[in-house]
Length: 170
Image 1 (cartoon, rainbow, N blue to C red):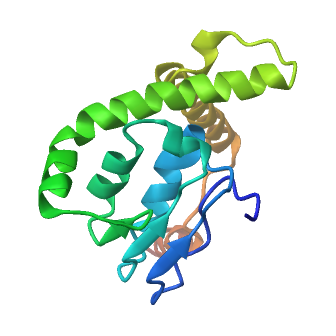
Image 2: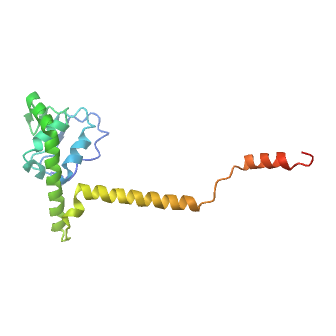
Image 3: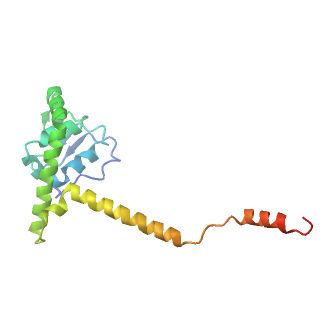
């Protein structure tokens, strides 16, 4: 009960074996990144997420079981080998569903702040497109700046060539 919205900063906790995040604010918009962060905790055996908004999603347990292979139990319930295998097989579908639901949560949170939302602006495709445009603009700017800089000169080579050819009698 610490008002936690995202799991982060635990990579250096090498021997963390139990993490109790009961009744916090981890929602679907941060679940994928939060669970990915816990992959680094190889000793993590028990995870408690009950009472977080993300657990309202039916695929939450399967998603966590599929991603965190080191876990032995979640919310006090053992993860069986069969459950993990089925979850790993369903992972691509779970990821797709999670990303859609995360998008919905992000839009809802933005709307709750009173900000008008153009839903196309916040899709993963549009974000990727914006990133690519920004990367291209950055490269063009760097190229322009590079072309405007004076050329680097190899003064040692220039002096050696000038010195050999310009001496009288040569």
